[in-house]
Image (cartoon, rainbow, N blue to C red; front, side, top):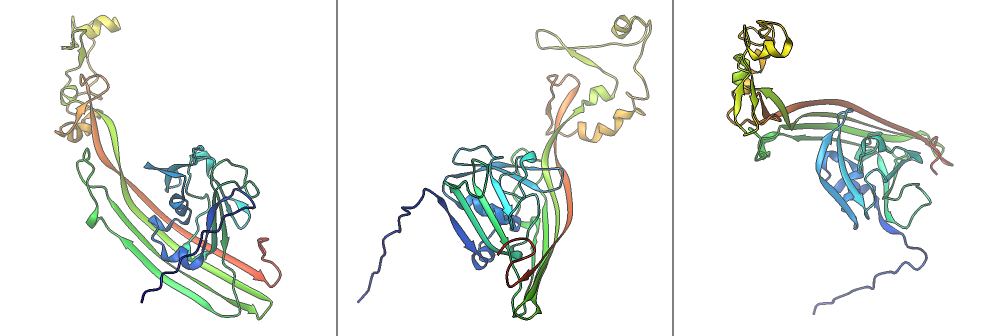
Amino acid sequence: MVDVIASAEVVNTVDAKLGVGFDSRKIIDLPLNARNIVGLLGLQSGVTVSDVTELNDSGTRDDGGQVNGARNDQQYIVLDGVNINKQESGASFEGALPTTLDSIQEFIVQTAGSGQAARGSGGQVQLVTRGGSNQWHGSAYEFYRTTGTSAKNYFAPEADVLIRHLPGGSFGGPIIKDKLFFFGAYERQTDRSSTLTTRDVPTPEFLDGIIRYERKDGTFGVLTDGPGGQLGKWTFVNGDAWNPALIGSGGFYEIYRPFSNDPSNTPGSDSGANTLRHRFQSPFVRNRNVYISRPTTTTRSFFGVR
């Protein structure tokens, strides 16, 4: 005999809030890209995550997205009651202060109907860090990702580089039993990655001193220099010639020749008259140490969270 047990969904008749809470066990067990806890917001209903990620000035990836159609800078992220939003960079799912998964006791996310903890129209994220207890607890971990399974972008000459190393740990316990406790966490974050980038480079002809211009019919003509050349007519300097410090075998632009000869290049902004678009993997390096500590008492923590 098989017993099938089902329970009716509980309907919230008090308010119109939509959201869910995560305890520390769920937070650690769920797979998260780069162990970014705020990324759990992307698992909620009504949330759209952008496919485009960009590297910002601080060396982290800003993941765009919207909650119920709100702008991506309208999410409101709070850590122990302190606003840690990053509206200046449009980061929807990442806080200004880095956090580690092992340091978070509770994660509460609301996608609609709550204005009590926020002032934005998007999702509301509340993070509560762990405090110590009368028992000694600790953790240690190490995560490593290499480029062995990286796929190549169709337009890129080679696969994206991503080497990520995340070792860390946490430790907490009593300072004075039943009265004063502490908790601390540390994580080392190192990234060796790349982003597909496009830049204009001079054509091989330009490097050889052959400067072209596009005619109205789409063909190219050559802008001659020297006595009687077109360059002299434009500059009113009879016999004007190209500066050998810039153009020629010993000129400054010669450093671009290895990139100019790439067969995957496409015509540049001038239809390929003198420039080509060169795609390459732009390297990115990040080394960051994250330290989190929190002393607590039996009444309230020093951060004001009961």
